[in-house]
Length: 406
Image (cartoon, rainbow, N blue to C red; front, side):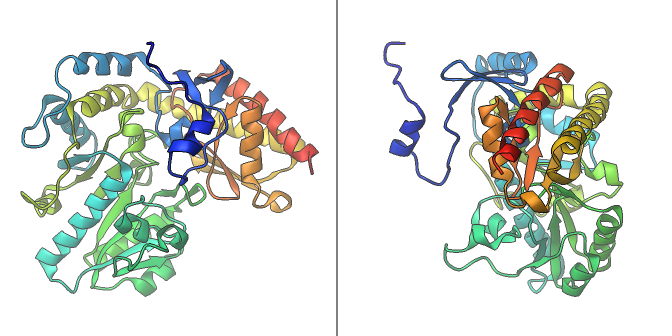
């Protein structure tokens, strides 16, 4: 196209707000677990767009779904419903604890809806005194003002004026700290089954079961934020299924659309009825394009072949990370479950995760951090074994470069 503007990384600094600091390279094309930048250089992708690209880049089934739907119907708003949204909702209900679904566009919006529903449920059922929300330190629930205040990292919510109130924070994996805060005035406890941004820390079995029991004791709703852990990431469709603990409300996004923006909450009939006509809404939520892509992703992810394959891939990742650690002694532990894994820096390399990311990019590998101390991996759920092999050859070189610079 003759009117195609030439843009590069410098253009970002000219025209974009400075709230991000993207890498110096600009990706332009992806295929499976491979990405190419503007200069034609190839990378192995172990970041998955922050746990979003559950089937890699440009998976044929998702490409076909969006092409077919793009020629039928793009958007009608929620003044009308649409077939892809209804089909996707039926499939989610059939495969989870839920009776009802609400669709939106992102994880933050899903958690916003979950918290609003919990407050409305408690108000209508028990009265306005039952409004306390308890979250956990180091948690992350999104960037709206409500969700970022619920998140357990005050630095993200400071500096924007008065915060939404009646939100308290306990210590993750410490049941006594929750017990000290919870009461009959608690409306909901919101938690990630595994802290994502907060360091890739899974809940212990005893903790997650104890949280459920405390919520039951005080008639508080249990909200699982499965934005990052959900939709296959843990080796189950949703991670609550691994623990055998059922939430009252579950938020989902990221992998749900395989790269197309979509989010949602799942809940029961009893709770869901409190989000009655007019109480909440979204113009784009559940639009036909997003739901058609998500349905195609669902049909692949929710199969024994893919979910069992995640376990095999997790073992490969862990083995490779252990081999690298035996050579260079940089990690204190490998945390996580399924294909959301965190390599934790040991004392000698504390706070230096970003250096490992920068070195990885130089070697042609895309990965992530989860705080200053954890290198995070969230690749495609169907990443090919040979790509895992090649990716870790590159990561080995990256680690060697960082260690050589000490």
